[in-house]
Image (cartoon, rainbow, N blue to C red):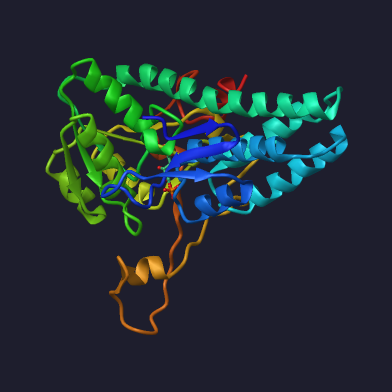
Length: 340
Ligand code: MRU
């Protein structure tokens, strides 16, 4: 399944808010439509956000009537600014935009060839996401043993990437190799990416999975029901801190307590070279997501709500990070080594 693709200026992508009941494809014609789809989580997952950002820039070039290279570059930076305001935490979105802008900035040629150059560069970025995920899935598989039961959180599958997935990519590759693995996956309150998306993907590939609510993680670990944790990331700092869907930190603390390996699978495009724990923004989402369940109010009127979408797991709780360039310890030295 390709989660996102380009077709003559139109971005075709799965509407993730409709899953698992309906597999609906959106046809997004402008960068503003892409921005809206990101904000309402029709497009979500860190690597996919990077790809969608690249495709928004490709659309800006595709639709441009600019007669000069300078004017086209200004249009590109305006689109970049719109996309950068959609969601603040997944660094892939920012890395993707900044890499493309940097690469096309010094173009010398006419506006027409610049347009083609930008589009090609953006589409190459999308293609690369599929390739690096295939590679990290292949590398990560050696950490998975025959008959392992793996715990995963949120959705780090094909739906969160252009293709293959990250944590689920590793799981799927191990399954393809006949390792007879099982999965336990959390529902992932409040937006249920685990229940809606991860179970959808695992069922499609016929990988046995058992759904639990987020507060059952301690129970399954205490009962010895899982051997390993594997999940994705939205941002990895060079200090080794992992920012991922809220609830990841609780799982990491419990995994340490129960001596269960805790693996993070993410492409190097998820690494934030400059950020530190003090200056990253954790997205705070609408209180309705917590106050309501599928449109039905579940809490007393007037109650205040906290709804951070992500949390931060410190490096001492992370066993290894699986990237397309290698499996590394969460140390500054090893993280920087895969960025070369
Ligand atoms: O809010 P979401 O659904 O975009 O959050 C996604 C996650 O936290 C994923 O675990 C993460 O992006 C890893 S994707 C391979």
